[in-house]
Amino acid sequence: MDAFQLIQSFFSRMRCNFCSHSFTPEDIQLLRQEEGIYIVNVYCTHCDTQNGVAMVGVEASQRDHTFPDPELTDEELMRLAEYDPITEDDVLSAHQFINNLDGDWQRFIPPEMLERCKSPETESQDD
Ligand SMILES: [Zn+2]
Image (tube, rainbow, N blue to C red; front, side):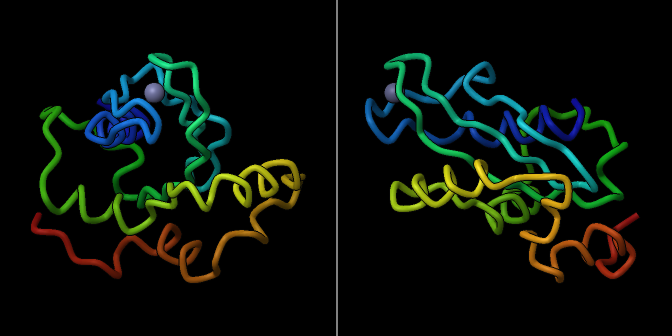
């Protein structure tokens, strides 16, 4: 399981805002990936409804990490949830955000978030 599959697994625990059907991995499509920032499109294939766009940060130490256990730990869920931007109110702004993406789209990323991706050592792991 790679980092993107981890993200898909994370969203599979969430439900569609419109039909309450659990998302499947196929509902989560990777739009962009750069420097540990994954921008994913969340589209419910059950009711054919766009749920929004999410930006998820994956720490550099985990990007090349494989996850043998498909079950997320509480720690992983918390880390992913920290960046969980999916609310109905966010759909419009996320749509505008995506429309505005260009070559230097990283300027939209909060500096501290970029810093986290570049400095995985700041958070000590139990290894
Ligand atoms: Zn749905």
